[in-house]
View 1 (tube, helix red, strand yellow):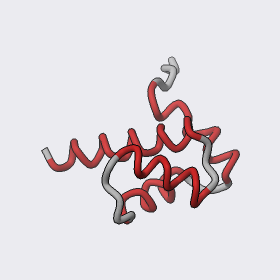
View 2 (cartoon, one colour):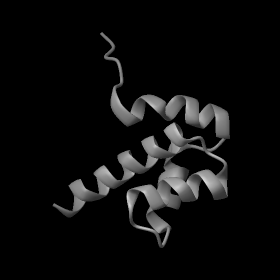
View 3 (cartoon, one colour):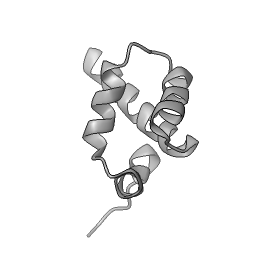
View 4 (tube, helix red, strand yellow):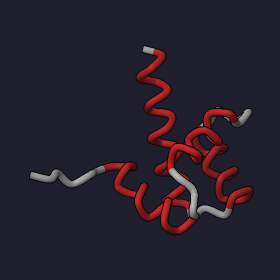
Length: 72
């Protein structure tokens, strides 16, 4: 029985296919960036790495949610 992936993670297979880098690598980039605000990170991924808005937003949202869960 397979469950459908929902939310930001649903973008991950197409992100890996389109940009040729694993999601873990994108998350590492986000975590090591000096930027901390969601939209700053989205803009940075778009301008510096050529990601589309939806893909950048999904990666940032998922990564920041993970970071918040670890801190709590």
